[in-house]
Structures are given as C-alpha cells and as structure tokens.
Length: 190
Image 1 (cartoon, rainbow, N blue to C red):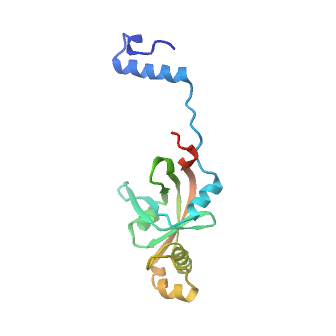
Image 2: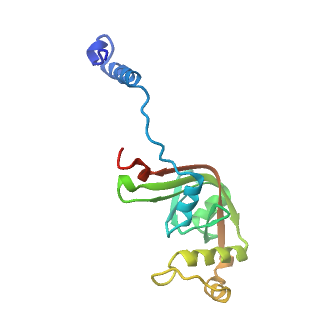
Image 3: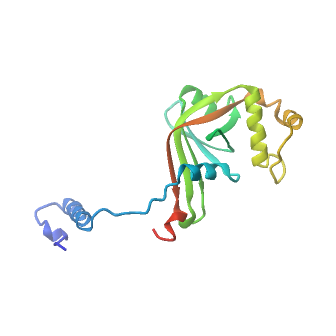
C-alpha cells in the first residue's frame, strides 16, 4: 500500500492532505460493497399492511418549514391512506401544497430496524362516504376505544363515526419515490 499519511503531501495544508489521504485509501481499497437491504415491492406492501404501525406525516407549513404529525393509516389499492379533521394543520398545508413525505419505521435495535419512506403528492378526498370507509378500516386495525381493534358493521360504523366523516378529509399518498430498508437482511453485520 502506498504512503498515505499527511507526510506524503508535505506542501498541502493539513485538511487538504487528509482529503487526499482518504481518497487514496478509497481508491486503493475499491468501492465498499454493502449488502442490499432494501425491501422488494411485495415486502413493502406486507410491511405497510401488517400490524398497527404509526405513520409519520410531513407536510410543508406556510412558512416553508416541515410540519410533522403521527397518524394511524391503512392501505387502499397499494397506497397509504389516512384521515384527519379538514381544519387540521396537515390538511390545510396539503391543500396549499400537496407535496408529502410519510415514514413508517419499526425496530428497537440496529439489527431490527425496518422502514419505508414515501415521497409523493397528497390526493385529498372530502367525500364523507369514503372518509367513513377509512374510519372503518382504521377501527379494524387500531384500538379507537379499549385495548383492541374492533371491526364495525355498517350501522355501528355510521353510529360511531358518521357524525365526524363530513368534518374530515382522507389523504391518499400518491408515491413518486419509495425508499425502504430492512436491517434484518444484514444477518447481524454492519
């Protein structure tokens, strides 16, 4: 291996010598190959469809800063869907600027981290019947009342959430880019 210390570049300032040293090491060792830890399309769908995970929703505030909010979500035709009150900040932001990023991540240790980040555009749907349908899917997936999710028949769904549906907007995330990671594919390595 060639001389790679700062002394190999005595006439350069120390910071430039360090950059050249690192470049020489990278060239000498070649590209670092890391195992692909991305999920397949089927794995992404399974990850998003299973369990009661929390969706982190990022919209863009009026002043240009990100607005983050945790939301319960469901899937509709392979797309992430959530609902919120129409007057909520996230819906106001998305009505003004439909760019959205959402994130779902699980895992308590590096070796168990799994996640999906979706960048896209928000399709806002204010139709109360669709919003009520989304309420029904959420009730079957998350514990709105009590400790367990409860699938609701049409009458019970209407009684529980019918009065709220007209005051809510459903958001379908139309993906433009999906990034995923599954550290369990690393088999305990880095």
